[in-house]
Image 1: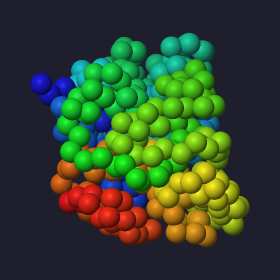
Image 2: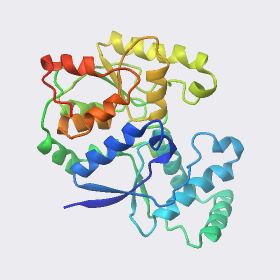
Image 3: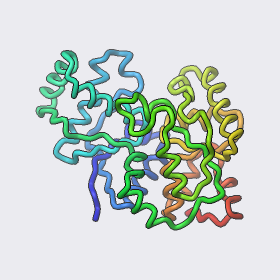
Image 4: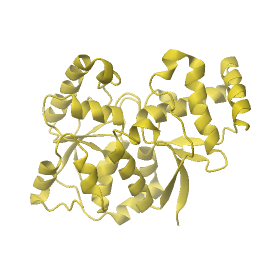
Length: 290
Protein backbone atom coordinates (compact mmCIF):
# COMPACT_ATOMS: atom_id res chain seq x y z
CA UNK A 1 0.00 0.00 0.00
CA UNK A 2 1.35 3.42 -0.99
CA UNK A 3 1.25 6.28 1.48
CA UNK A 4 1.22 9.85 0.17
CA UNK A 5 3.12 12.62 1.97
CA UNK A 6 3.86 16.21 1.06
CA UNK A 7 7.49 16.85 0.17
CA UNK A 8 9.44 20.07 0.51
CA UNK A 9 12.81 19.93 -1.32
CA UNK A 10 13.97 23.47 -0.60
CA UNK A 11 16.43 25.40 -2.71
CA UNK A 12 19.51 23.20 -2.22
CA UNK A 13 17.91 19.94 -3.30
CA UNK A 14 16.83 21.48 -6.60
CA UNK A 15 20.36 22.71 -7.28
CA UNK A 16 23.67 21.61 -5.73
CA UNK A 17 22.22 18.70 -3.74
CA UNK A 18 20.24 17.11 -6.55
CA UNK A 19 21.56 13.63 -5.69
CA UNK A 20 20.08 13.99 -2.19
CA UNK A 21 16.70 14.89 -3.65
CA UNK A 22 16.68 12.02 -6.15
CA UNK A 23 17.92 9.40 -3.70
CA UNK A 24 15.44 10.51 -1.02
CA UNK A 25 12.45 10.29 -3.35
CA UNK A 26 13.53 6.93 -4.81
CA UNK A 27 14.18 5.34 -1.42
CA UNK A 28 10.85 6.44 0.01
CA UNK A 29 9.03 5.38 -3.15
CA UNK A 30 10.64 1.94 -2.96
CA UNK A 31 9.31 1.63 0.59
CA UNK A 32 5.77 2.62 -0.36
CA UNK A 33 5.89 6.34 0.48
CA UNK A 34 4.99 8.62 -2.42
CA UNK A 35 6.39 12.15 -2.11
CA UNK A 36 4.16 14.82 -3.64
CA UNK A 37 6.21 18.00 -4.00
CA UNK A 38 4.51 21.04 -2.52
CA UNK A 39 3.07 23.03 -5.41
CA UNK A 40 4.46 26.57 -5.75
CA UNK A 41 6.71 26.24 -2.69
CA UNK A 42 8.98 29.13 -1.77
CA UNK A 43 12.35 29.40 -0.06
CA UNK A 44 11.85 28.81 3.66
CA UNK A 45 14.34 31.53 4.55
CA UNK A 46 17.12 29.28 5.85
CA UNK A 47 19.53 30.35 6.85
CA UNK A 48 19.45 34.12 6.40
CA UNK A 49 15.84 35.34 6.72
CA UNK A 50 16.14 35.80 10.48
CA UNK A 51 18.85 38.41 9.89
CA UNK A 52 16.33 40.50 7.95
CA UNK A 53 13.67 40.23 10.66
CA UNK A 54 11.86 37.69 12.80
CA UNK A 55 8.57 38.32 10.98
CA UNK A 56 10.11 37.30 7.65
CA UNK A 57 11.60 34.15 9.16
CA UNK A 58 8.05 33.13 10.18
CA UNK A 59 6.21 34.29 7.07
CA UNK A 60 8.24 32.29 4.55
CA UNK A 61 7.88 28.87 6.21
CA UNK A 62 4.27 29.57 7.18
CA UNK A 63 3.31 30.03 3.53
CA UNK A 64 4.71 26.58 2.76
CA UNK A 65 2.81 25.06 5.67
CA UNK A 66 -0.41 26.61 4.40
CA UNK A 67 0.22 25.20 0.92
CA UNK A 68 0.36 21.68 2.45
CA UNK A 69 -3.00 21.93 4.12
CA UNK A 70 -5.59 19.89 2.31
CA UNK A 71 -2.90 17.81 0.57
CA UNK A 72 -1.28 15.86 3.41
CA UNK A 73 -0.86 16.41 7.13
CA UNK A 74 2.71 15.05 6.88
CA UNK A 75 5.43 17.21 5.37
CA UNK A 76 8.77 15.49 4.68
CA UNK A 77 11.72 17.91 4.63
CA UNK A 78 15.17 16.41 3.82
CA UNK A 79 17.33 19.54 4.23
CA UNK A 80 18.44 19.95 7.85
CA UNK A 81 18.23 23.75 7.72
CA UNK A 82 14.79 23.73 6.08
CA UNK A 83 13.58 21.08 8.51
CA UNK A 84 14.85 23.12 11.45
CA UNK A 85 13.13 26.31 10.33
CA UNK A 86 9.81 24.74 9.32
CA UNK A 87 9.65 22.65 12.49
CA UNK A 88 10.60 25.62 14.67
CA UNK A 89 7.91 27.71 13.01
CA UNK A 90 5.22 25.18 13.96
CA UNK A 91 6.39 25.41 17.58
CA UNK A 92 6.43 29.22 17.62
CA UNK A 93 2.95 29.39 16.09
CA UNK A 94 1.69 26.85 18.63
CA UNK A 95 2.90 29.08 21.48
CA UNK A 96 1.20 32.04 19.81
CA UNK A 97 3.26 35.06 20.85
CA UNK A 98 1.75 38.45 19.89
CA UNK A 99 4.25 38.81 17.03
CA UNK A 100 3.58 35.27 15.80
CA UNK A 101 -0.18 35.85 15.84
CA UNK A 102 0.25 39.09 13.92
CA UNK A 103 2.41 37.39 11.27
CA UNK A 104 -0.03 34.49 11.06
CA UNK A 105 -2.99 36.80 10.49
CA UNK A 106 -1.18 38.69 7.73
CA UNK A 107 -0.08 35.55 5.89
CA UNK A 108 -3.52 33.96 6.26
CA UNK A 109 -5.10 37.07 4.76
CA UNK A 110 -2.74 36.99 1.80
CA UNK A 111 -3.18 33.24 1.26
CA UNK A 112 -6.93 33.27 1.83
CA UNK A 113 -6.86 30.32 4.23
CA UNK A 114 -6.43 29.74 7.95
CA UNK A 115 -3.52 27.85 9.49
CA UNK A 116 -4.87 24.67 11.09
CA UNK A 117 -1.71 23.54 12.96
CA UNK A 118 -2.28 20.01 11.64
CA UNK A 119 0.78 19.70 9.39
CA UNK A 120 3.51 17.57 10.96
CA UNK A 121 7.04 18.36 9.75
CA UNK A 122 9.20 15.23 9.50
CA UNK A 123 12.76 14.49 8.45
CA UNK A 124 13.34 11.37 6.30
CA UNK A 125 15.94 10.09 8.77
CA UNK A 126 13.28 10.04 11.47
CA UNK A 127 10.79 8.53 9.03
CA UNK A 128 13.10 5.69 7.94
CA UNK A 129 13.93 4.70 11.52
CA UNK A 130 10.33 4.43 12.68
CA UNK A 131 9.52 0.75 13.40
CA UNK A 132 7.07 0.09 10.56
CA UNK A 133 9.16 1.63 7.80
CA UNK A 134 12.41 0.24 9.20
CA UNK A 135 10.93 -3.26 9.14
CA UNK A 136 9.85 -2.72 5.53
CA UNK A 137 13.36 -1.53 4.69
CA UNK A 138 15.02 -4.55 6.30
CA UNK A 139 12.71 -6.88 4.36
CA UNK A 140 13.75 -5.31 1.03
CA UNK A 141 17.52 -5.11 1.49
CA UNK A 142 19.37 -6.60 -1.49
CA UNK A 143 22.99 -6.26 -0.42
CA UNK A 144 24.94 -5.59 2.75
CA UNK A 145 27.29 -2.67 3.20
CA UNK A 146 29.47 -4.78 5.49
CA UNK A 147 33.07 -3.66 5.36
CA UNK A 148 32.21 -0.03 4.71
CA UNK A 149 33.49 1.97 7.70
CA UNK A 150 31.31 5.05 8.19
CA UNK A 151 31.14 8.05 10.54
CA UNK A 152 27.58 9.40 10.90
CA UNK A 153 27.59 13.21 10.89
CA UNK A 154 24.42 15.01 12.03
CA UNK A 155 25.73 18.57 12.15
CA UNK A 156 24.30 21.42 14.22
CA UNK A 157 20.73 21.86 13.00
CA UNK A 158 19.29 18.41 12.51
CA UNK A 159 18.76 17.53 16.18
CA UNK A 160 18.83 20.98 17.78
CA UNK A 161 17.28 22.73 19.60
CA UNK A 162 15.99 20.11 22.00
CA UNK A 163 12.33 21.08 21.73
CA UNK A 164 12.20 20.12 18.03
CA UNK A 165 14.71 17.24 18.11
CA UNK A 166 13.66 13.75 16.97
CA UNK A 167 16.85 12.31 18.48
CA UNK A 168 19.19 12.98 21.38
CA UNK A 169 20.69 16.46 20.72
CA UNK A 170 24.09 15.56 22.17
CA UNK A 171 24.39 11.88 21.26
CA UNK A 172 22.00 11.13 18.37
CA UNK A 173 21.74 7.50 17.30
CA UNK A 174 19.17 7.19 14.52
CA UNK A 175 21.61 7.50 11.62
CA UNK A 176 23.94 5.08 13.42
CA UNK A 177 21.07 2.61 13.76
CA UNK A 178 20.03 2.96 10.12
CA UNK A 179 23.56 2.44 8.78
CA UNK A 180 24.03 -0.57 11.05
CA UNK A 181 20.84 -2.10 9.65
CA UNK A 182 22.38 -1.72 6.18
CA UNK A 183 25.32 -3.79 7.41
CA UNK A 184 27.86 -0.97 7.50
CA UNK A 185 30.56 -0.73 10.15
CA UNK A 186 29.63 2.41 12.09
CA UNK A 187 32.50 3.99 14.02
CA UNK A 188 32.15 5.65 17.40
CA UNK A 189 33.37 9.23 17.49
CA UNK A 190 32.73 12.42 19.47
CA UNK A 191 32.24 14.94 16.66
CA UNK A 192 28.95 13.90 15.08
CA UNK A 193 27.18 17.15 16.08
CA UNK A 194 30.15 19.55 15.84
CA UNK A 195 29.75 22.50 13.46
CA UNK A 196 31.25 22.26 9.96
CA UNK A 197 31.11 26.03 9.49
CA UNK A 198 27.64 26.15 7.96
CA UNK A 199 26.97 29.20 5.82
CA UNK A 200 30.48 30.50 6.43
CA UNK A 201 31.54 28.09 3.70
CA UNK A 202 30.01 30.55 1.24
CA UNK A 203 31.22 33.84 2.68
CA UNK A 204 34.32 32.91 4.70
CA UNK A 205 35.81 29.73 3.31
CA UNK A 206 39.10 30.20 5.13
CA UNK A 207 37.26 30.06 8.44
CA UNK A 208 35.42 26.89 7.43
CA UNK A 209 38.37 24.82 6.21
CA UNK A 210 39.95 24.26 9.67
CA UNK A 211 36.59 23.12 11.07
CA UNK A 212 36.07 20.68 8.21
CA UNK A 213 39.64 19.37 8.38
CA UNK A 214 39.20 18.67 12.07
CA UNK A 215 36.05 16.66 11.41
CA UNK A 216 37.74 14.65 8.66
CA UNK A 217 40.79 14.06 10.84
CA UNK A 218 38.71 12.85 13.78
CA UNK A 219 36.58 10.63 11.57
CA UNK A 220 39.72 9.02 10.16
CA UNK A 221 41.20 8.69 13.63
CA UNK A 222 38.07 6.79 14.67
CA UNK A 223 38.59 4.39 11.77
CA UNK A 224 36.09 5.78 9.26
CA UNK A 225 36.61 5.65 5.51
CA UNK A 226 33.74 8.03 4.74
CA UNK A 227 31.38 10.52 6.35
CA UNK A 228 27.60 10.31 6.07
CA UNK A 229 25.33 13.32 6.45
CA UNK A 230 21.73 14.50 6.08
CA UNK A 231 22.40 18.16 5.30
CA UNK A 232 23.24 19.64 1.87
CA UNK A 233 25.21 22.51 3.39
CA UNK A 234 27.21 20.13 5.58
CA UNK A 235 27.85 17.87 2.59
CA UNK A 236 29.04 20.81 0.46
CA UNK A 237 31.41 22.00 3.19
CA UNK A 238 32.71 18.56 4.11
CA UNK A 239 33.33 17.56 0.50
CA UNK A 240 34.47 20.88 -0.90
CA UNK A 241 36.55 22.34 1.95
CA UNK A 242 38.59 19.40 3.22
CA UNK A 243 42.32 19.04 2.56
CA UNK A 244 42.00 15.24 2.25
CA UNK A 245 39.89 13.11 -0.10
CA UNK A 246 37.43 11.41 2.24
CA UNK A 247 34.12 10.59 0.51
CA UNK A 248 30.97 12.18 1.95
CA UNK A 249 27.66 10.39 1.32
CA UNK A 250 24.06 11.35 1.90
CA UNK A 251 22.47 8.66 4.05
CA UNK A 252 19.71 8.17 1.47
CA UNK A 253 22.29 7.26 -1.20
CA UNK A 254 23.56 4.41 0.95
CA UNK A 255 20.04 3.20 1.68
CA UNK A 256 19.40 3.18 -2.08
CA UNK A 257 22.61 1.24 -2.63
CA UNK A 258 21.63 -1.37 -0.05
CA UNK A 259 18.18 -1.66 -1.63
CA UNK A 260 19.78 -2.29 -5.02
CA UNK A 261 17.98 0.64 -6.63
CA UNK A 262 18.78 1.82 -10.12
CA UNK A 263 20.38 5.28 -10.60
CA UNK A 264 22.82 4.95 -7.68
CA UNK A 265 25.71 5.37 -10.11
CA UNK A 266 24.28 8.69 -11.31
CA UNK A 267 24.00 9.94 -7.71
CA UNK A 268 27.58 8.99 -6.91
CA UNK A 269 28.90 10.58 -10.11
CA UNK A 270 27.59 13.94 -8.87
CA UNK A 271 30.09 13.96 -6.00
CA UNK A 272 33.20 16.13 -6.03
CA UNK A 273 35.23 13.40 -4.33
CA UNK A 274 35.22 10.11 -6.21
CA UNK A 275 33.40 7.49 -4.12
CA UNK A 276 33.88 4.57 -6.49
CA UNK A 277 37.38 3.50 -5.34
CA UNK A 278 36.03 3.07 -1.82
CA UNK A 279 32.88 1.25 -2.92
CA UNK A 280 34.85 -1.01 -5.26
CA UNK A 281 37.19 -2.15 -2.50
CA UNK A 282 34.32 -3.21 -0.22
CA UNK A 283 33.99 -7.00 -0.43
CA UNK A 284 36.49 -6.99 -3.27
CA UNK A 285 34.21 -4.94 -5.49
CA UNK A 286 31.13 -7.12 -5.03
CA UNK A 287 28.83 -4.17 -4.23
CA UNK A 288 26.51 -3.59 -7.17
CA UNK A 289 26.33 0.08 -8.11
CA UNK A 290 23.69 0.69 -10.76
